[in-house]
Image (cartoon, rainbow, N blue to C red):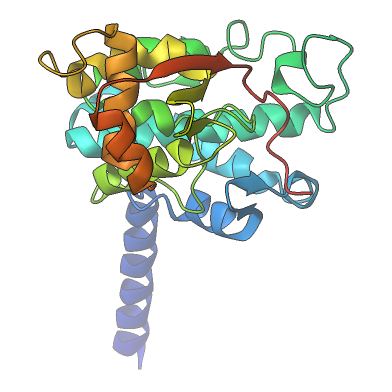
Length: 273
């Protein structure tokens, strides 16, 4: 009887050790964020009022990301690191909005509920990361910009209708390239972001994209295409030819005679109403 009891205690001890070890292994499926996004995101819009009631889920997820060491991060695959940083950025965006929700700013240049009403949102507020305390701008431009995949520009959600797309799932290192292509497709085919006026041969595009055209140039600039156009026009045309859904618009663009008009970005909060 005593032997059996000792054996049972040993089994329980091993189970507890295994459980503790499992908690130390980073979840590359980002299951916690994945569940949050599947629950509170609809067509790229977030149910902030509902998420506010469960904001401890975002806090817990951010804590898990912050527990990762720089050494551990170096052992991840490139796509796992890309997923880590994109999810980190988007989770911090959600946390920043929830910390200030409901946003009711006074700046007349932006909608009252815009994240741009929150002082220090991107450039001043610093967060603990494996690479030290960083702002959202530093994560975006000092880390994500240097990771090689240019479509990341469509995957960074700034909490605004016209910013990058928040998918209804977390980025995952096993399929992040496909996920980013989907984000690019959603952004480009949203007529508030990009619209092709075939009759007037004009690309209407939100000026949000202008700061990212140098990043996108490497993969979407075609030296021998659209010779009478600037590299910016060339990139925009090729982005639409790659991800756009309107075949008539693509035919017009391929003819090479078109104009580009930059429109104001919708900086209103991307809230599900």
